[in-house]
Image (cartoon, rainbow, N blue to C red; front, side, top):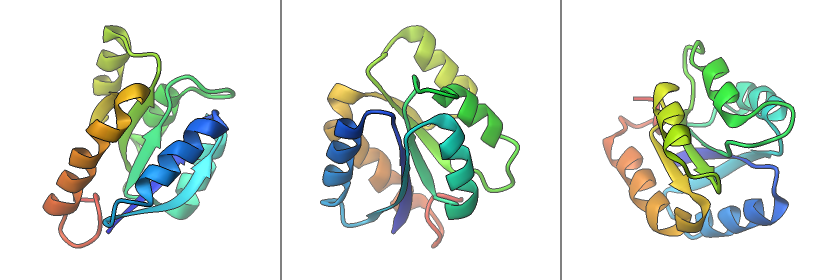
Length: 129
């Protein structure tokens, strides 16, 4: 089982991703945040294995959230989900250590293999391998 935190300022997309993840047996959504600052605070408390993180958000963008968490002893793994799919964003995501960058239009097809891979390769406690 992998604990997942959702971070996106679009409530419609949050509902869609939550609904999709409810069908994934090895995934459990443990929390949601609507902006970068809320995401950092909530992640400190919830300590998710994986954070599905939007790039463009109010108060603090997703790339800055990821940079802030790089110094954490047990930072969640990050997959960026964004409608702003560009080479520059993909490179920036790699530079902050993200597992993947997934376009929002493609999340259903692309997320399942990522989550399955984390569950399969993790030693008993989610993605904190």
